[in-house]
Amino acid sequence: MPQKVRVPLRVVAGHYTDAAIPVYVKVAALSRRESGCEAGVAYLGGLLGLGKSTVERALTQLMRPAPDDDIAEVTSYRRTRPGGRGHTAVRRVRVASRTEHGAWVPTRAAEALSPRQLRAYAALSYATATGHHLTLADLGQVLRHRSGKKAGQPLDPRSVRTILRGLEDLGWISVDRRAGYRGRHLYTVFDEPTHPALTADVEEGSGGDLDGGSLASKEDHETDSPDDQPPTAALGIRRRREQVVAREPVENPQLAAAYRRPYAGPALSLAPRIWRVLEPVKGLLPGLAPYVVRELAREIGRQLDEGQEPQRLRQRLEFRYASTDTVRDPGRWLLGPGIVRRGCGLTACESGRIWHTGRDCDVCARDRAATGRLRQIEDELAERERQLGIHAPYLLPPGPEPAGRPPWT
Image 1 (cartoon, rainbow, N blue to C red):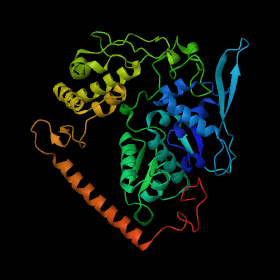
Image 2 (cartoon, rainbow, N blue to C red):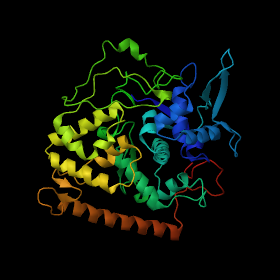
Image 3 (spheres, one colour):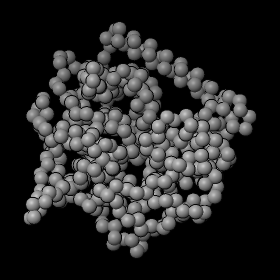
Image 4 (cartoon, rainbow, N blue to C red):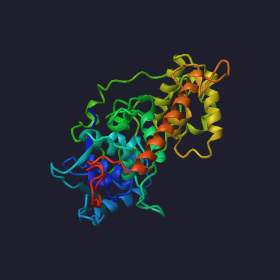
């Protein structure tokens, strides 16, 4: 079972920024240890893929009393060594009562999803657990703008639909369209993604190949779960996963000193057929984490084994790399937009065209036509509900809503 954290509903639907939710999830997971969360800001940012300043702002917001109920979600205690030198602060989350509403969120989702996607995932997790059938407008109230000129305004249905489609494509949710109350969508929330090839490591967390745990730092050498045993005791009997045949080694990444740790696994290497595919993007390979290189090789090998030609994958990477202005995260780009095949379930389909003939894919054409009709129906129904003022009584109660509460409670 994946490790899960209960996020208070006031954090999911309250005034907190999107970045505060993954930071809360990670601090809550690490604070389950008896000593509390001793991870530094740089370490948290490295795990979550967030900048140091973003993590600092999120922690500051979580540690301050909320303006509506004067409750602080995170406490921080500074420590000093006997010699006077500073030490990493110990952080703990507020102990919520059992009657307080909250959403159960896997810690892995905080690392795999963007902050806004994680907020949508947490809202759907709570709604499905309590049996509420949400509309796009309901989710837009939770995913509202929290800064800028539109601060406080709900997100428009089209933007909410884009976020949900991203969660569905990544395998964290599934959507049964128009199958719920008054033709609303039914959502199923998964504790783990159903597309393992899009994630870093499906068996051992965010850093499974680095001695069996998450990327560590000098402040926090243990994994996210307090129940995990120290990895050094199991190194002698740890099962090694199948490696790709060697051609020449890939350079090991140069991690920041805050979370650098020696790699104890076998030397990383790639087979010749993998190298031929990666030739157009070889400039992105130096500096990648070992588990990213392994997952990338496995995904390419899987696609080659199912019948896709090496030249097809090579041209796909070459075209997408040339069409991308800036690749900020090479590992995430290679495992996601770079190598994943787009199209329907036909192996011969490549982004809506049959690879061997170049003609349009009939299946994709039918899917696009059906999607267009569905979106038109959704827009018409949403406009009709807005004009008639139709709302479910338990979703939109009369009177002003208290701050920090979603519209369906």
